[in-house]
Length: 400
Image (cartoon, helix red, strand yellow):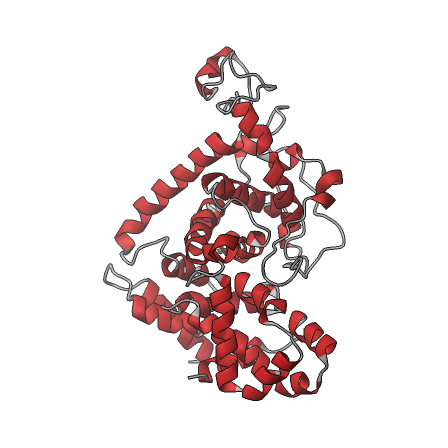
């Protein structure tokens, strides 16, 4: 039996055991070394490792049914315009679906209780979401392609404007909607490095592209988390998760990729939300603390690199802010990001191994870093050179 077939057999045994309960310790051990790109192994493993599904297989059906129904409710209450009818008609038979919008609530109303006022205010953060998702993962065409399972109550609008989120914003004004994040010693930190030449186009009536689905996920997340809202870079976190769920070979799971992705993304964001909230930068789980841990590890493993960068005044925020905040999703091609996240999600301490990977990335480039001047090192660390990701992960595993 080949090594690959043996690994597949191990995953089959742990994810479909004769007993009801999954051995989480065994699953973490297997997934840490990479999940095979076959069957539904990765999608199912991530759902379990992120806590969306519990270890008892008998509970999965009820959990999935409950969560997917809840997500559909989110769409109806948070995405569809005020006064909508569930099927896009405006007949009198649908008056029960008008979400309480009466004569006192007019589209021009500015009252705090006005559903229309909230609807238009949402467009402020929707501008940034729309801009970001239209450029998601430009290295592949996946997000530009139509989904096999569009959201019917959204795509079949029957002339009702605003059901599809991109219809609410005007692309011409997006250039002024960039997010600036101050307080890290830099006027502005550009989180996103991979850019598509052109924005992704929207689909015709009855269809929607994968980026439109991601847009809806982020919009609902921002609506449900008003204290945090949407921050540029969240699109790079949800993108790989959605790709895995929407590529699931099991069509019964793929059909519900949007809902499953939303809850996996929400679970992950509950762990890294401090990275995206500036007021929590100095907290134990904040981004400054994470960068300090990486810097201390580098100092311990290779004092020469540490002192060289310190002499050049090349501060960690110039490179590691993006590495850590976006879980390296901007530094490597998507297949490599999925492999990294297999290990990161399997880590019981979650982000300890992420810091080791980041440290290894620098140690592997030791000679170049020590020879380079400031400008060359900034370019090197902000545009990490192509490398076999298994070399980086193996090196990270070796760090005690």
